[in-house]
Image (cartoon, rainbow, N blue to C red):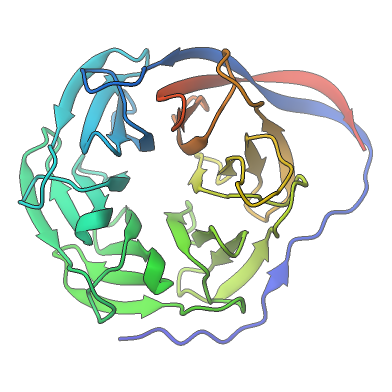
Amino acid sequence: MVFILSATILVATHFPYSFSQNETQYVFVKKWGVEGTGDGQFLRPHDLDFDPTDKLLFAVDRDGNRVQVFDKDGNFINKIGSFGDKPGQFHVPYGIDIDVEGNLWIADRANHRIQKFDKDGNFIMTFGEKGAGPGQFDNPRHVRVDKDLKHVYVADSKNNRIQIFDINGKYLGEVGKLGSNPGEFQLPVTVEIDSKGNFYVNERVGSRVQKFDPDWKPILSWGSYGPGDTQFCHMEHIALDKYDNVYVTDPQSDLGCSHVPSVKKFDSNGHFITKWGSYGKGDGQFRDPEHLAIDQEGNVYVSDRKNDRINKFSPVEVDSKVK
């Protein structure tokens, strides 16, 4: 079944206002990781996700072709995978999702497939191959499993679509094609699901986030190319917290966009809330923030690809007057 999209989409707008409120800011807590292939070291860390207990952080070590497991303090616990194209091996692993049972789903980008592992890292199954047909992939970058364990959603990036599978990897349908209209994509990178079953997809080339209802009808979008608070220079990844706020990593662009690498936070309707980050190697700075995950306490963990580390930030409330 292929989903046909036809709808009027809203674009998030922002109006001036002024009132006193508690504003959430994010402060640096700690970092871990250096360049290398040892335990706790990274070669271009990418996607992050927590297990259902909210105690273990799984980090995709992209060029290390493995997944590493840490506690919230950055202590190394385990590692999964090696380089190759056999079951359980990786070639440029990119995105990760951990389902409600603790199973790991990995977008194995250069192998053009999705792999599933149990919570201990034992291989379970794989599906997909290179191509543009149903169930085939071209550089898949992210995978997301719904909370009912019924559907698997894959950001099939270079085919500019989201593919939908059942929990056993059977192809069910797809959403999108190349374009800039509502429901179309220009290099979709991430697919996320909020507490109401709405979908969010961000586009690297399209420089926007699109929101869809549970039936994949477009609701709204926000973003454009540029350095502003609601713009993106090189948007990489999105993640949602338990309140359905949307966090976006926006690394520096090599295309001439004057921009400081940052994490930007929006509400579920695309209204800008805050941002943080600066360029460098110091505490709380980024050289290339790639992916992120938010724990149940609201702490934000950001993988910094060029610094080969993970940064942890915690929210603090401050009094402010917003205009």
